[in-house]
Length: 631
Image 1: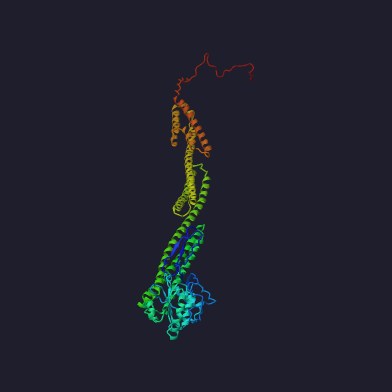
Image 2: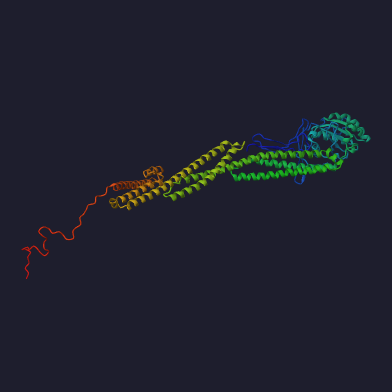
């Protein structure tokens, strides 16, 4: 999924050598997980982690295994020997205690008897002190329980302090010398750290004191650690300051075992909260690492919402843990001077402060991680929206181009042409909305390309180029369609005017009676003027003469209007020809001279007699053949 992140959160609140959270990029194939980091010396390594498990407070201790011979006695002699000073290791040593995380609850029954305590006191060179009080009960402590107890106590100091090693004080003033040897044997067999010095306050009884004087001379050189046997508290004070020792050792150090246990419980509870936060962060980051970016807008938006809600919940958990720690710290600091000094000396306050610093650093680094991931997730969502918009626009533009290709009608009348132009412009507005949207999508694509690491250029750029190409095609075809319809409308308008002109010309020619024109020059001249005026009406076509009709129509003609234009041109030619002939005829009649008037003599009232006299009206020529005998 690209750039991943690992968060290492130190739950070891006692280690001030490493007090920060390290968030780094893992190597390829490495899953980002929260890990506990520790500082390990060449002598010993003690890692402590506090966890809260359910209602119990659990102390998590991660301890690097130590060789059992790191601190031990020489394998010679016998434990029952009082004179040779040597000890023999058990033939069947107790298996080492499990190094699983321990808490106060795990060792509560071992802490209360005070077999061993850690008071916060230090030696002159700053090493932590562990005291084995003289309660005459150590012999009842089983080896396995001893190991658990010591493992827990050595995990209390910070790693930095633990790496310095430990000084031990074994108080056996009221006990027997065999008890001293028992303690030393347990220490030599198992101690998870470096022991520099063991101070033994030997038994005060006369007989035990005599035995210790003899015995100690033989066996104290057999240990890997330095053994100092003190006859009195004053001798112990020569090695350890009284300010670092408790009252039962003649010191001035205030210590309450019950209060120490209570503060450990509070501290481990707070540490458990931080550990739970680290586990939750680990799980969240791992889920982010294992989750592939979806391929749809809905799934990507859902993932963004879910991970955003999980981030807010984790952020609240961090803040709640910090608030709990701040309240605990405030409570410890507002106690009386002795209680505050006790908390500071035992490391409780510094541990809580260190955990709070770690929480603050965790919050800051987690915010940085989330912001980086959120940016990538938003880029993914933007890319998915870009791809979805591209697919939708691709479908729309395919439909637009198909519709434009089917727009072949140009109209047979001016009214129809106007309707087609209106419909085309409405469709052009519809297409323009998709074109504007495509421009926004292209701008989004260019933003994705320019954003560093958003998405590969080869994924987005071809889609941007395709949208640009289709937009240009749709725009060009619609513009050409509108232009064709405009020309068609102009043509239809001219055709209608031409038809009206032709009809008017035919009507004019039919209304003129040529016989009247032939007898009257005035009538002929009038008819001639009517035809001339009719021919001059061609100005309505913005032409100087009807002869120019043909050129105009041929320029405007298309394959669809070719037949109509041809018919109109033929009518124009016919009417023009008839008009030309009539004009020529009328011009002749208008220019023809008038006929001369012939004088006619009126007839007389009495008809003239022809020569020889007029025949008698009743005189008829008798023909023999026609004669009829009258009787």
